[in-house]
Every structure is written in structure tokens, then in C-alpha cells.
Amino acid sequence: MNHFTYKNGLLFCEDIGVTEIAALVQTPFYLYSQATLQRHFTAFDSGFDGTEHLTCFAVKACSNIAILNLFAQMGGGADIVSGGELLRAMKAGISPKKIIYSGVGKTRAEMREALYAGILMFNLESPQELDRLQEVAAELDTRARVAFRINPDVDPKTHAYISTGLAKNKFGIPVDEAGKEYLRARDMENIEIIGVSCHIGSQLTQVDPFIAALRKLKVFISELVQEGIKIKYLDLGGGVGITYDDEQPPHPHDYARAVRAELSDLDCTLILEPGRVITGNAGILVTEVQYTKSNSGGEKVKRFVIVDAAMNDLTRPSLYGSYHEVIPVREDTNPTQEVDIVGPICETGDFFARDRMMPVTAQGDLLAVMSCGAYGFTMSSNYNSRPRAAEVLVAGDRFQIIREREEFDDLIRGESLSRL
Image (cartoon, rainbow, N blue to C red; front, side, top):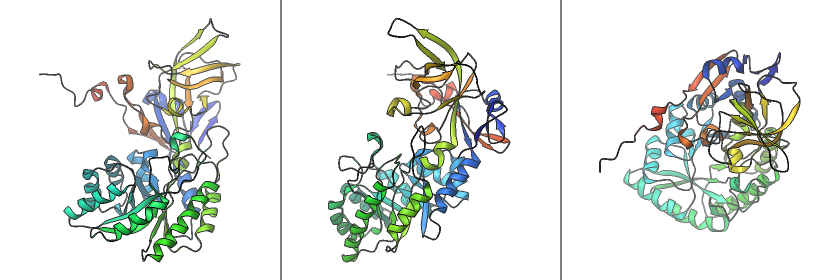
């Protein structure tokens, strides 16, 4: 459930009209509902009530520090994959003891910063990464707490670009090779083994792949116990999907119930890394129609709605072919027609919707691209030298700009004319 609804013919976010915000902020902008963010975090986290667990929000999904701070106030931690995300989590008030560090390419500098901060755990993804972390921790005369990310070779049945648990993916260590890395780590003076980690993919709409991976992990953990290696934390990753179009993902409580049933005989704290399932449907992208046009000459007349947002603002449709519902901010009873909704960038791939039935649209109309709260702003760029959009958070009948729109000076910050 989200808090974007029509009232008297106008789209509202909670108790304030989107047109009112657009008049003050200008378009394009990302708009988030605080009530939806809090509802979704609670719905996910509460499914594990009665089980020792830590919900670490996946910062890559939605990294604004105002939103991260909301989750910190609710007891949440952070799953990070870069030094920049570590900075964001700390600035947002998330305890370092609730931060886990994933990712296949951690640098020495990033490892040092995380060790200085005192994070809970590194999720290691290769033998060389283990060796590097041992060296860095030794230089700092400290011990690094670690888990290894196990690749269970389970098909998550999702888009190939966001599948992470198959043998052909770059992530993790194959389950049949991970045992020897745990034995190596056990003998390293500056490494402390505390966990096992796994993440099989994103936007999963079935529970079965999670359970298949968990069963492999349980067998693996029992083998570690036989070697005298105690596991305190089991990190199951994230990946629970949301509804963009006609998907039917499991309710977070159904996912939790299935996981808890499998965990009944394991004595360890569960770590979860939800991202999209919390923020995905809590945010929209608001954009204004600049032009409408029709191109003839092919098999049929092609109609275009050209808006001021673009693929640099929301890349998912271009990158993945992803579906996002697009609705008018002013509820429309006009006849519908088939259109492509496109942006101003010089790429044919700059689109939000293709061959979509929409009410007849005119210059100046506002459109809302729905379900943009995850991997929306965080994947945006300055392609075509376009300033990145503003981000706005609504709470009840009030709103706050939580990220100012970039200005042209921001585009060239740090650059200089050549004097060679």
C-alpha cells in the first residue's frame, strides 16, 4: 500500500497535492511519502518479531540521508557497498554496529574507513579480498569481523542483470569452494569469522528461491560447525520484489514465515537486507509535458509525449526494459490513445513507456511515474549535462526538499581549463 491517491481529481501524496509541490519545486523531482516508508519498513521488520534479527536497509536502493535517518530511528541498520554509502549511513545516524559492508571490489581505503568506523561485518566475496582485508587490519592493529558471501547457484527467476546467485554471476564464492576460505580465515590473526552471507538477486516474486538458497546455507553452516567454526550471524540478503505492473510478489510476512520455519534449528542472528520492497512504491517521479508530436510514414502514426524528465533521471526503463505505471497528476477522463512517453535526451532509448495507452495529454500537464522510490535517484546521472532532480519528502500535509536540485555550476565543479 502507498499514500499516493486521487482526491477531488488531483493526485495527492498523503495530505498535500502534487500540483502544489510542483508549483514550488518545479519539475522534474522525486517525491517520497514518509508514511509509506515507515509502513513498509514496519511491515517487513515485524514479520521477524520473535526471531533475533537485524534489518539492514540496502542503501543502494535509496540513499538520501533523510530517508536513511527515518530507518535509523526505527532501529534499522544499513547494507552498504561503497565508501560513499558508509559516509551516508553514518551521517544519517545509523550505528556502525548495524552496518554490513558488501560488494565485490572494496579498496584498501574503503576497508580502512570501515575499520575505523567499527562496522559490524564485512561480507567478503573472493580469496584476494580476504588477503587484502587481513593486510589492512594488521596495519591498523585491529581485527576485522567477516562473513563470506556464498554463491549457492540458485536461479532467482528475475531479470538477468539483477540475478546475483548463479555460478555465472560475479558475486560471492561458490558454495563448494567457500569452506577452504573459512579455514584460511580462521588462521589469520586479524580476521574474526562471525557470519555467513548470501544474496541471490533483486525483484524476486517467489519465495522458493530464497528457501532453496537457505537450505544450502544450512548444510554449509553445519559443515563449518564440524570444523569448530561458530557462526553468529546469517545474512540472507534482500531481493523481495514489488508490484510494478502485474507481478504478484509475496507479502513480506509470507516471506518471513517461510524463512523462520527453515531457521527453527539454527542458533544465530538473522540479518536481512531489504531495499526495493521498502522504498520502491514509496516514491514517484513527477515530470511536466513539454511537447506532443506525431510521426507518420510507417505502418501507423506514432505519437510521442515529450516530458522534461529523462533516462538520466530514471534509467530503469532504458537499462532493463522495466515497466513503470505513468498516470496524470490531474485525473483525466479524456479519450485514450497509444503513445510513447519520452525524454529530451539524444538517445532512442530515452523513454519511460512505449506503446502505452494514455489519456490525451497537452503541454504543461504533469505526469507521475510510479514506483520510482528504489533505484530511481540513486542510479541517476548527469548525462547530456543535465542537472540531477530534486528530492522531496512529504509527511502529512507538510513537505521538505531533502535534496536541492543541482544547478549548472554543479555540473562543472572540479573541472578546469587545460593549461598544458
